[in-house]
Each structure stands twice: as C-alpha cells, then as structure tokens.
Amino acid sequence: MEQPPLFDLPPPPGLLEGLTYEPDFLSLDEAARLEALMATLPFAAARYKNYTARRRVVSYGGSFDYDVNRLQPAQPLIPELHGLRDRVAHWLGVPPQALVHVLVAEYAPGAPLGWHRDVPDFQDVVGISLGSDIVIRFRPYPPVSPRKSDIVRMTLAPRSIYLMRGPVRWEWQHSIAPAKALRWSITFRTASAQYRPG
Image (tube, rainbow, N blue to C red; front, side, top):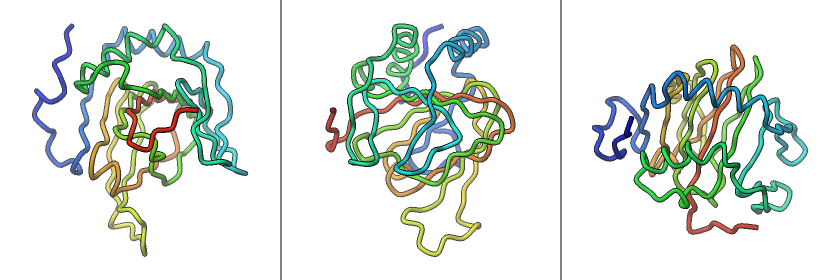
C-alpha cells in the first residue's frame, strides 16, 4: 500500500510542536518480518563514556564516540533495511540518502533510556517501534529545576512511527520508561549542519 507523504497528513492533535506520530505505520506482516530480522543482528551493549546501558544497539552509517564527541565510521545500512528506509524517507518527504544514520536498539524487559537529546550531528529524528508498547517522556531543555508536572508522556505503540523536528527536537529532552516486555526501535536520522561523518 502506497504511503502518502508526511506533510499531506493533518498534524495529530495535542502533540508537542514538531512532534508527529502515526500508529499502524507498519502492517502486521511487515512488523513480523522486521522482528524476525532483529534476531539476526549483531547487537552490542550501548556505551556512553564510562556507562554501559542496559539496551543493546547496532549502528549503521556512523557510530557516535562519546569519549571524543565525534561520529566514527560504521557499516553501511544492510540491504534488509533498505525497503524500510525508503518508506520512511517517503513518509518524511526526503530522498532515502538523506537518512544518513540508522540505529537499531533492543530493550530487554526493564531496560530504560535516560534523559537526553540526540547528538547535534543529526537534525530530524524518526523512530519505528516493534515488540511491546513503551512510554516516551519529554521535558523542557535545559532541565533547570525540573518538575514532574513539566513532563509530557506518550505511548509508542508497536508498528508506529514518530518524528521529532524543530522545537521538540532542540527545546526538549526525551527518555524511554523501562520496557515491560521485549521491544526494539529503529531510529533514522537526517544530517544537521554539524554533521561530521568519520
């Protein structure tokens, strides 16, 4: 089924400025094929300086080295994900080659992702969810005297897609609540003016 370009769609109500969300982006069959692919990927623990996260990742098109704050070379995107990249690019309204980085992450039950903004090498951030649903949280950046009442929560359903662009990308941090069951995300990123491929 042909996916209409993103900006032909009306913006969903009640979302933060720059945040677009669409459930059921993937069909059940597409999601099943991608979940089967997840079992074959060479996931490794995500490392941030001296911290090792509980999620496991594999990176395509670059891998950010937090010790030197620079994007390092990584393997090109595998052919099995080219079709998904093309669909995401069409949804976003950009050529597939504009999606310069792809990060696939596996969240075991109980694995969270702490508060952060994506590195400034990247501009738009698009995420696909597989497996269980998850709660994504947003809070204003920088978090000066953060309050629970400032946090905005949204559930990411399996097979959904979201875009963070503009204000929600740069003026908010986001985090992922601990996973209740096994979950994967496939995150596509476009380059910013600071993009410095290794």
